[in-house]
Image 1 (cartoon, rainbow, N blue to C red):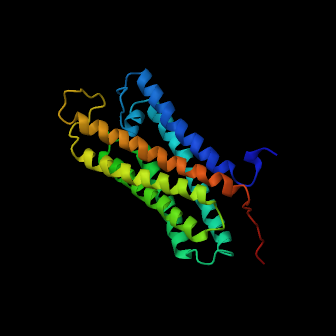
Image 2: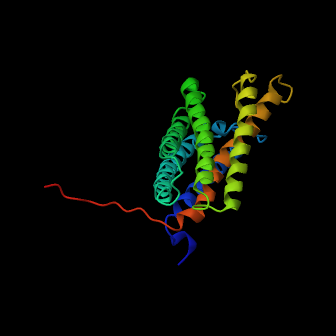
Image 3: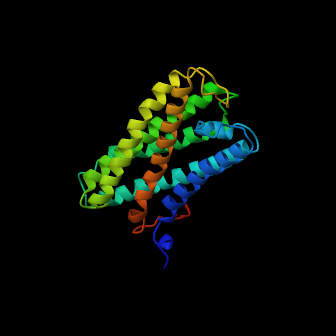
Length: 236
């Protein structure tokens, strides 16, 4: 049996690979068509102009669906862990579930409402995605700590804490520097006054996005040991 056939580990693996491919493919197409600058455009800038906007929207929607499935599977996994690790908070687990789902919903908003068309809605989606996503992975770190020695190992726990810390730290300059970016053009010039803030904000945005996505890689080992089944019952 191959590793991806064990339990549900294919879920987080697919989520990470597909989401990473979404960012990279759209970036490459946008660069090839000269729709954005080579040096660190915002992620959403790579999905503004067609055809990359169509690809970005479709692939991001699939990523969001895979994200909801993975987050729900993690929620059920923690419920199983609570049978042995009784100090794991059920409320914390439910809060993490809903925050994760909201984050995925924010991802769909970002992909559907381009920043050059409906910027306010796009920005709201980005805030939902990043803020709820970061809080979600932080809560998962607390849950992993409470569940020890059940669930993940100390090494995986440390990796999760490192990823969550990096995402939280990188999010701060993403937002702060974005407030100083006044121009909305897709092509920027180095002599623009707000160019350094644009680069700093964009770099940190890429860091936050990839750290959030790669956090789900830490689920692969845990997901090998359980499955989910749908049970159909006929009502009398």
